[in-house]
Length: 439
Image (tube, rainbow, N blue to C red; front, side, top):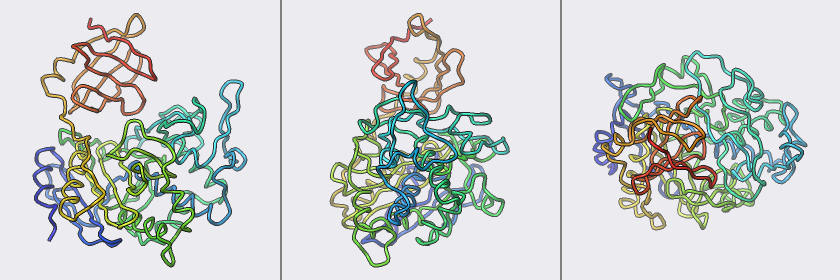
């Protein structure tokens, strides 16, 4: 019997999540799966076990496993300067300084690189090549990643850094990334309902869930397209992601026929850098996955436009779960599901995530709406958006700020934050603060 269903159904209704799919792992095996709701709001098309969701940033640790398989084969070195192997693009100098960046640093978000995330492209829009993404050339809608911090020192989340890994793997193997992932990870682990396919071909698009806002409104065109495959481009199911987690667990345990040597699996799950702030209750980063302080729990969260998902596994006991939703409001649902699974299945090392903070009250968001000035520097317009804010800085496209607490918000694509502090709205970025003065 699936003990998660009743709670998920209640949370789905409360949080306006149209559809959800999940899988539970016990002792290194998938023991329970379930689905609820619909693929698209206001339709009767139910979520099925093979319904595809965007894994978003969970694409990253799956890609890291492929990278580590090439390290195992002696084709790559985790601590070599990536510019020695890149052919199509090079990590550029930072003014007069040419930084040395390694795969270990890129996979652990400690390379000091920019470009945290990607907004994706509307269905049917022109898509950039990987090199155009890395250089920031049209039609790319992001600035190319650059090293702006000393590598190896601190956490700076960088989807751009993962895109560097994608290009390096293609350069070294002369194989398209989508095909390489199928060869190295998806097929060996039996992830038959998974594809790094952007855009989706028609046969897969017919099985895909539509993304939705926190208000339950469908994304225009169904979803955004993410050519940044390694960072955000995996379409998959919870069952397939559970197979990935089991594959990592088996490698760590040294199981016969595991994809990765125990030595590299243990490096993969060794905490390298502290997360700031923690994400989904995990506090460190290994080579790809997020980890707790001991490295015993590993997982990752993911959030593309209209999709939220979470994966968590215990490398020692082999318990875990994967929850995937087709809603921007799905993160809270998945974290509540993890807490329920921990209680029901006796997860001894899991502690309920303290990120289930109270969301900002609607009246607080309404009160924050208006036009502001940042000192004498620039102006910004603030509007409520779901449980967070949509902020338009003068001369810039709108930027969504998601809630970190009932009074603090973080930009979805940068490190900037806004905090309601003693009745004042304060802007923070890289240690720099300015009051937002209402006009």
